[in-house]
Length: 224
Image 1 (tube, rainbow, N blue to C red):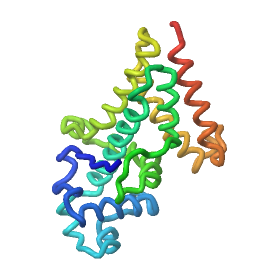
Image 2 (tube, rainbow, N blue to C red):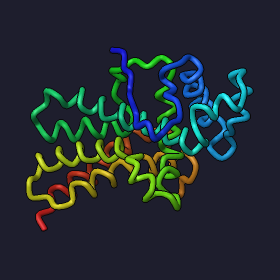
Image 3 (cartoon, one colour):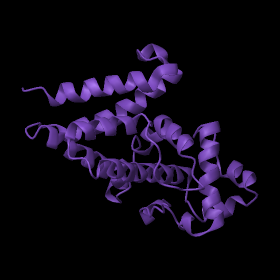
């Protein structure tokens, strides 16, 4: 099914979803950040790549940090859609937790069409760059502007499933965010810093799923 995600207007100056140029900016930003890394990505390079002016890009986003925030917020919103789709008719919390873990390692089929966004490349950006959104001096200001709401909404949705599994578990939000971040960090480490993980990058999805499952159920089953 076709998906059109509406995001917080504080993320952009002009909604990129409402024009061909805007959608091109998003599409090629994802491709270039995936290829170059966020530090080497610039609006000047983006403008040259899509045959427009740098000033035209700035009409949509005030800086590249805002653009990164936009595409990662898009990812979190899409992830929650996916999670709700796969768990909507499932009543068993164990099954729902297993679905979550499969989503976190990017294993389940995408149920939503968005022709200008490469989900695979966006996923790699999220695992490598998403911490840059809130490890900033203006994190409190961004939080006040609800810049992190899609991420917080997803973690809250996950915490509800944990509470369904164990109604007395006190740390459901902490476990939700920890599980999401661990999935990203361990994949990043397997690719670039292998001494920080026990996973073979060639078997990362299988091994990481087992680890995340062990982590989640060990904590949720702890009676203390």
